[in-house]
Image 1 (spheres, rainbow, N blue to C red):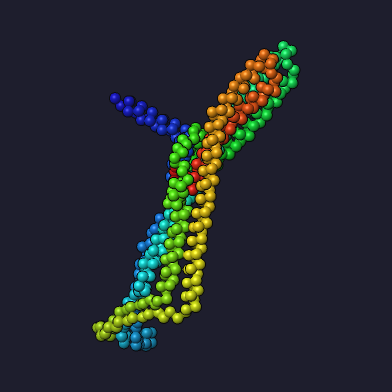
Image 2 (cartoon, helix red, strand yellow):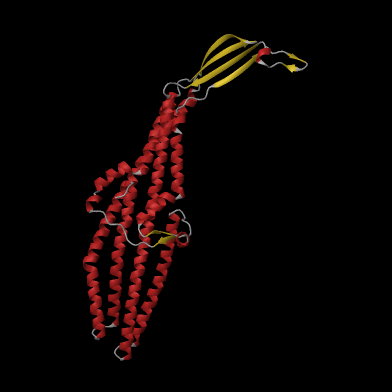
Length: 420
């Protein structure tokens, strides 16, 4: 009975080694790539760590400073062996414990400033992810366009092969001039050159995508794009509703709002610095081996440097004004980008409907008629080539309109800060 477990163990080990050699495949859909990047991208991970660090700073910001302990040796004696510095051998020893106390409300303001900083750091992390996700979606759509264009180009190459064969057969029969064969070969060569350029662009998109994914290991295989996302319903593209989501969810606006809150609290703290801080202390006095007295201390700083404080207050006011202006500028830019993306997406959707419903079927019928007419000698070869170019252009226009909608959808999602 023992050989069976041994064989099973060996088979499992061999299977594991084979899988390790094959590597992990990712991609095929933009959702798969986004999930991988969210877990693995180093820049986004760094922003999350910084946000966590900013959150950890909130509690210490409002804490009291550590108390101070002091010792004072009085009336110590000296001889040939040096001074006597033990508490029991000097005239008296004073032990002091002091604690600094800021003016009322300053600790709360410092805590609120740190909390606003934590919110800003979290919003920056969200903005980093939004920007990274946008780049992945854009690159994925471009890569998809390259792949489909290559497929259409290879289909046209097969069609040109067919046209060349027809032209050679008719030329051999003396029905058409040799120029038809030469033109077919020239078209094939030009198309092959375009395909070579598309293959290079596709390889560049793949390399760019690997970089956006955080540089996955070499054994991670990046599958080519297989599909684009389903387009949202027209009801989801209402401009007013999207603008409301932009105001509520955009991470850049959230970061600016947190910066404004921090600036407001900093201004309040600056004005609160007009009031003094305190120091309280308790001291005991030891004479030889016994405590002979106690002292209670109270200190207050005197805020005399009014010019310096007024300058700090003006600085805080201007920083608040700058934060508010920055948020307004960001909002204006995002609104313009949202409206532009919606307009472009709507135009691309109408182009897709026109090409798929009318232009592409007409181009296919034109090509079929041109091929039939050329074989019977009713049309010349230039008409066939024009029909071939027309159907190729119609197919490319269709996929470009679809990709353009995906690109503008990514722009809208970056603006509103979430998926549609």
